[in-house]
Amino acid sequence: MGTMIDGGEIIARMIKQEGVSHIFTLSGGHIQNIYEGCLNNGIGIVDTRHEQSAGHAADGYSRITFKPGVAVVTAGPGVTDVVTAVANAYQASSPMVVIGGRSPLRQYDMGSLQDIELLDVMKPITKWSQAVYETRRLPYYMAMAFREAMTGRYGPAFLQVPSDVLFGRVDEDSLEWPKNYRVTGEIMGDPALIKQAAQLIRDAEKPMVMAGSGVFWHRAHRELAEFARAADVPVYTNAMGRGTLRQDNPNFFSLSRKPAFAQADVIVILGTPIDFRLKYGRAPAWNPAAKVIQIDIDPRDIGRNRDFTIGIEANIRQALLQLTSEIGKAEHREWMTYLRGLENQADEQRSFFMNSDAVPIHPLRLCKEIAEFVDDDTIVVGDGGDIVALAASVLPINNPGQWMDPGPFGTLGVGTGFCMAAAIAAPEKKVLMVNGDGTFGLNGFDFDTFVRFKMPIVSVVGNDRCWHQIYVGQKAQYGEGRTPATVLGDNARYDKVVEGLGGHGEFVEHPEQIKAAIERAFASGKPACVNVIMDPEPAGVKGGYEFK
Image (cartoon, rainbow, N blue to C red; front, side):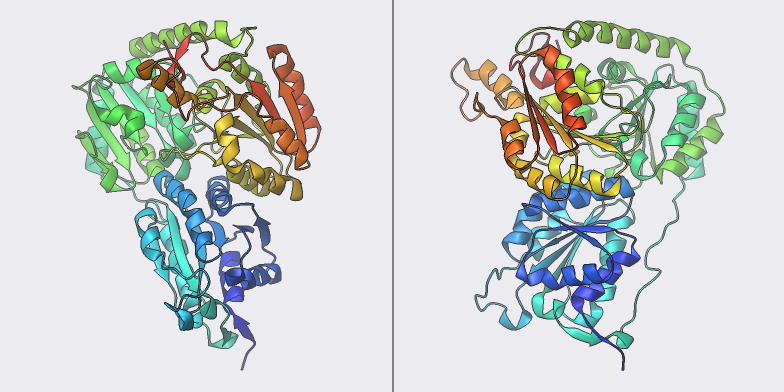
């Protein structure tokens, strides 16, 4: 007879087998022996101030490490608190595993503490949502959760564990431990379709590429650069695709995306859905006569919202390798030169505002100052609305995984979780968070987590004292003074909040103060907040910070 071990030990061993170094959690009696298992197996435990942050941290850990991030939450409200983070990961196709507590089986439907069935709540926002009812089956259920999260289109998995199953003890020698339970091979594109796609790109006069998160998750950044050079095409990026092509690459474009979609005759969509971010593929945003080549690991996204000319189910890296080989060498110099001219015009237009000395501070000036602190050893987390959209177009993001934002679900409050994941998984990097003032209020108290775990994360808050994306449209539609629920306090000192939690705070009202304030924030060696008072109605931009 072997050693008797409980479910917490079993779960921890399966987490360790996946190479996951930390879990993210908020304490609860239903799950406490998982902590003991983690201590026994050398797995770090990061406890947050809200389960939503723990979920976002697990999501962020996946994006940094390409391993399944793990969040452990207690029963009832612990699970409901993590729902938003799970939904965000689901929409972003981010692999994470959430382990949720549940009241003991013997007390189901008796009214025990936090006794509520939540599997059906989780099913629409996960790839897999199950409960385990026997301690000895925990290894297989953990294997199933990891397999679901990390195969096909990535996404979250949820495992509910009743407390008497979790605290149950079994003979270690009686357990079977799954080892090889998920495939790691890459699916190639149909050769005939690849040949047709290559021919379309070669024959096009105005081709373009939209590269999304699939390029990142399939680690296809080198293949993207090689394909772009061979095909001689402009490449635009979104979501986790940002950074998969360096900004000094001659095929990188960003400021001419709107006219490119409107005029392109061949549009190549790589690993991103044709959703609201891409105007659903509809005219007039897209050229209605354009031929569409759509490549994705999940065929359910191919042809959604717009018919494709060629649809290819494949791993993005493999498909790009195949396309590059098939294309050989194409040329689209006239088109590329035209778009580069538009890029230069847009850059000149915004440079006036990037150098503005106006007070309150213009958001483009703030983004320009932030950009001075972003190098290849910086991870940038965007958590906000307009200020984040603008920062994404200004900051020098040149490496895969260097930029993290919520993705298509648009969840506000992801920032603190993503940042703590970055600090844990990439301690050699600087971590810079671009915040809106509204988003700070959602999970800002996890600066306490930063302090407790000595994470020197710097947040720059673009403080326009309102929910700007809503405020602008609301005011335009209903008039001055008809903007309820969009105006925030003029005197909100987020920097003081961070100071009160043990961090470093800076308050900035004039543009010439920004650089020194951010320098002091990084030099402090503490979690820091630079609270920058920004113009709520900046010149030269309209709602969503799109150029007029």
